[in-house]
Image (tube, rainbow, N blue to C red; front, top):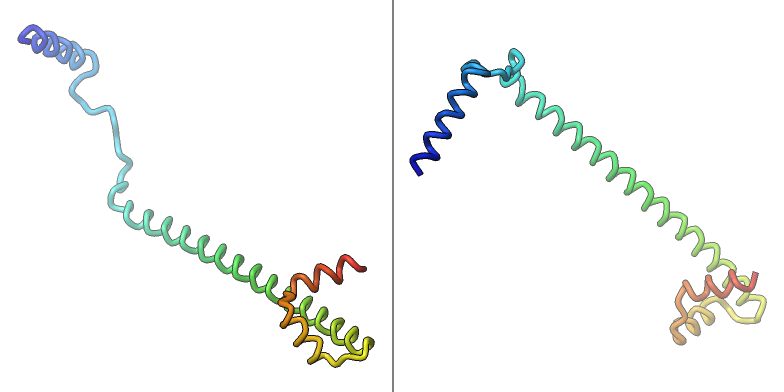
Length: 115
């Protein structure tokens, strides 16, 4: 064990002779004094980006809901016209569809396949 320590000391001595005792690494002037401000700016930028993506996702979802609502209203108007053409009023057709548990998606699928 003592031999290992002697070898380590010898290697450290040679390294110090070659490189010197001076630290070769330098930090730019004022680096640590401005570091907190730079970190805060980066965090704020990331938060703005996240907020932007959230608003974009919310806008896409709102558009999907609006489009689906318009399609369903249009399809319910088609159901009402079809019911009137068959001699039924729309309330009777709605009651029959609810009683038979026919969903709006099934109605839309049926109508789009028929077209």
